[in-house]
Image (cartoon, rainbow, N blue to C red; front, side):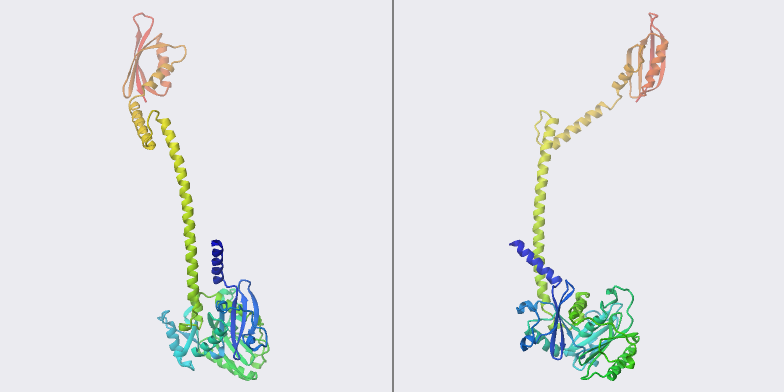
Length: 469
């Protein structure tokens, strides 16, 4: 039971870190178009469908969970239409801090808004190479709140509300930022012309970052009006100190004009891949960058983030407790093994002490053996404190060559010298004994102090003196 609970908790944690499904929503002609993708498989789940299908009965509803609670936990990114957005390229003073950034952006963009700044929601994206240079967007809080209420009626709660111009730019420039593209060659300043129904969207970008945009609606496509809007956008770009675009990319079906002659265009992504492009915009940004880019701020911020954090903290606390319990069990097993080895070592020490100290009662084997070793060391020092008489006697008795015998009458040993008195058969034997004593290596500087015939006139008495080790 506990393992099943742990498996479910780990599964929920993994799903919260890498969602198996993400929804993308766009607003078109008063309707909400919904699509979905699987980030794990990098594949779309279903193409755009109208959320009103289920109510109108004119088609099949998108394959969403039946439970509203389950729907509310699906990651949803809503792209706000560019024609209902005011955008501007701004440069903030270097002294503006992160906490003052939103107020500074509002003060700079306020003059271009058709609604009061107090009713505005702001989003912005900074230039990675120059944090003081940024692109800002503003929308109406009242209008967004109305669309959020419609989504809540369907059981859907957006986590992010992003400018739709970023989605269009992502479809024409997959990979967005220069650091995220496989090629390190920088993108030039380029323009995008995207027509969808009666709406035309013009974008200008450099290195995957949006510089300016313009959107307008016209019942019938008018190339002349479009070209005038393109010229106005280019003039605004020049006034802001930017370079003119080196190329324009256009969606299929745009009527060519002399101003757009010779423009080639890659095909943008299929509509079924919109959700993948939307997820790409979120996935390559950290939490702080995604929060700045989303219009959901203040009271409209996504409340599920706090709930997911609490849930994640609960799971983390449970896993921490489980890890602590595992470490405690492992430490207990380790201590048990150490105790067993310690008992075995004590038994071996008692046995060694009983053998080394026969007749003694073993109480503290280590202390008793230490005392016995100290006693033996003291005895060794006493025995080896003076001359090695035993070695001198051994050399005097074993070094003479065969055939030569002598009788040692007396031996005197001091700390550095020794003197030997003896008898042998001839003076030649006395010389042979001297050479044999020197050959031992332990007797040096030998000298024959006296040598002469004894009273019997048959033996020779001698006296030798030398140094010893």
